[in-house]
Image (cartoon, rainbow, N blue to C red; front, top):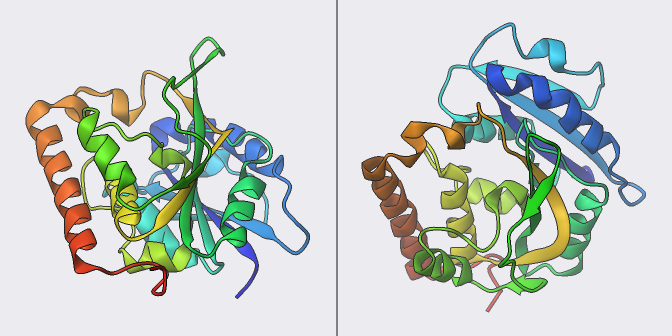
Length: 253
C-alpha cells in the first residue's frame, strides 16, 4: 500500500472559488520522508464552474457526479483513495501548516487510534478568527465519549468532524459518510467513536470559513423537524454499533 494520505473534498459550484485557498494550504503541508498526499476533489453535480479553480497538478484528481450532497460526494471519492489514511478538507476551509504531519504522527504512533481531530478556528468574513472555548484536553478520546458529550450539550460534539483524519479501512467498514441531507459528518464521527478510540490535538488544525453561502448557514439546515430526525438517526446508528461489540482494531480490548 502506498504511503499516501488521500485528502477528500466535496465541492459544489458556489464554493468552488475557495478551492485555490484550500490548495495553497495543502501545498504548505510538510510530511515525513516517504509520505505524500493526493487531493480528490469531487463535485456534487456536473457543471463547468469548478474545474477552472483547480490547479494543474498531478496530485489533484477531479471527478463529477450526480448531486447527492456532500456526504455522497465524499463517499464516492473514496474510490480514488489507495493509501492507509483519509483526510477531510471542505472546499471553503484551509489546513494550517503542520496539520497533516500531526494527524499522521498520532495514528502512526498508536494502532488503537482509528481517527484524529484537532482544534478549529472560525475564519470570519473580515479575516479575523474565533475559537471554541470548550476544547477538550489534548489526548485520546475514548470510545463513546463523543456521543455522551454530544447528547449532553444540545447535539454539539466536543471535537469537530470537519477536521477528521481517519484510517481508510475503518472509514470504508462503516460505509463512509451517512446518507443524510446534513450532519452526515457528525453521524460518521459518532459511529467512528462507537467502535474506536480517537485523538484530539489542541494545535489548530482547521480554519473553518464562515460565509453567507455555506450550506450550514441556510434555513433548511436548522429546520427543527428535519434536525430532530437527523440527530435521532445518527444517535441510533452509534448506539447500535456500540451494542454489537465490534471494535477497531479487532484486538483493541
